[in-house]
Image (tube, rainbow, N blue to C red):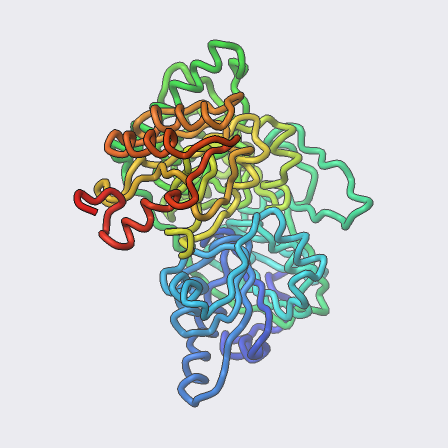
Length: 497
């Protein structure tokens, strides 16, 4: 059956006529992979025209994680977003959130489908979902991400499907799509290794809800990663040395547990280092995104298989995957995010998690989302789910930023995403702090000695020594002194405060 039949084919302008001011609109995509494109871009242009007349037009935006530039940038620049969840990555949208112009709900990504299905966000008026095909009986074949799209299709009152001719129909060969039933009768999740499959290659929608399809032919907008710098390479080497030590001691089996890696240059550097190290055995991944570095690792046989919810790869790498689909479809499984990020599965498989943060304090509380405790950068994403539930979790950051004016190790972080109970191993280019089994004072000494930059160590040691007694000693008159210094002098350790 021809994709789209028997649904009417709409122009983008006709499609957005069904979206009203104040609506909650759920868009496909987990990162820009598989994100809706032409409908949000057209919606942004419409919002500008409406605003020029002095009229109000804003929508509430739901996605799986971050999304396409048409959502993160175009809609934000058109001042067309009033509310956003569960993650974001746009410069203008970030400004609007920090200016209190947009209400932002930053949340764990595996919680999104349940929250939507439970009605905690209210009605989802419209879902706009990218697919390569929709059949007459409501089977929707998604493209480069699964994310929360299966739940959006089930819960939205109305649906528009963007049929993207640029995306290969063979992407469905990787899809393993399920939707969890509501409690209290949830069944056990039968994922016993990263490549287990229990679902279908398609999501399901009630055909009566589908207003129509909009045809597009646009690639995902995935930016490339910068080559690893010296700091990233040192962090990677610290992680690799520690994993090898754990394997030699028998704490990690010689076959090594599945790995997870967050998005970014540091994570890519670590993966590249693991992939080229002769003493790291071939491994599996159970993660949320499949990234550029994984393509060559898989072709070289170092990455045996990977489970994810999106193909967050640049266009050339996606072409490499599609052109060799007979190989990659046997080694990659794409699931919805309620499974790719599910705490129970992460714990069952013994995942080793590798995620980045902005900063950590001397007792092991970590901040991955806010600058100076107030201004959002992107959000927590999936890092909390993996850090809390992994067999072994690493949080990684350069020890300083802005040429040393900011220390990533501080007495107390003013915003906490992963607390001291979850953080096991902290890594900077200075070294690695294994915090397992250590009480607060031992943690503080280890973090300062191993992870802090030398220019900040004396200050941090004095802070600990002068903070008095208690289980977790703090001087509440000084714990944010470094932040106050930066706000006043432009550096955390001014020469002449």
